[in-house]
Amino acid sequence: MLSEPRSGRLAAWGNALLAGLVSPDDAVLAIVGDDAVHRVEGLPGESAPVGLTLALGRLRALGVSGLRVALPAPGHPLGLSGPPEFNARALEAEEAVICHGGALGLVPEVYEAGPEGDVHVEVVWHCLPVRETPPADVPSLGEAERELAEALRDATEVLTRLDVAGSGPVAEAAIDAYRARAERGQEVLAPGYPGRAVRVLELAQRVGVLISVAYENGHGGAVSASEMAARAEVLRPVERTARRAQVAAYNSVVEERERGMR
Image 1 (cartoon, rainbow, N blue to C red):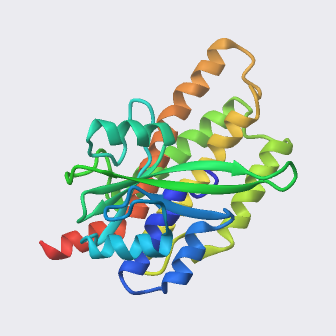
Image 2: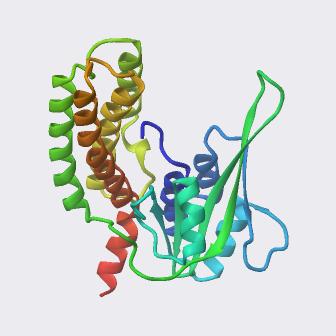
């Protein structure tokens, strides 16, 4: 939750490119980030994997007008619309991109290559058919913002009570990572996104900090089985809310465009 999902980068900068707000080179540079290279496999009309620049141009030619994010988890097909084969692959990756207007979806597969000490990451996006139906369980930005405020309050309360969000190197590192990212401000999303989407995504990441601290800090002060169960019981819906808010933020430009066309 602390790091931006690859599907988020692809959707955000892909949407900016489709809207003519950034150049192909700038979009691809932002999408790839710290990875070595991204390729797209299974693109209609291509017999072999192709680079992102060609892939994004081909998707536009195929009628794709926007990109949505899906962040599914077991029992929660968030952002997915089928068919089952695509949903299963997206669930395994825990993320996917749905192409609006093209009945296609992209699921990342991540590879590490190179010798020890010089490992680099390569990503292959598998292009598969999807159903063009409303995505599952995606809230509006307003709903996501309200839900996150409540989730942040609940998470802070339970973690404080169980002494999980206290001091310690893991907690300090997580908080420092969040602050460093927050300082980058508008870099959280690509050009063209509304300010409210940026706020929602930043708040979702803040909630993610608390969740990461709780899980990475061992059992913290939760010394009894009942206390540990209570913490897990609170964290599960909080994590679900944060994922829903992330998807709402990334998908907001496509949702706004759809509302404007009705």
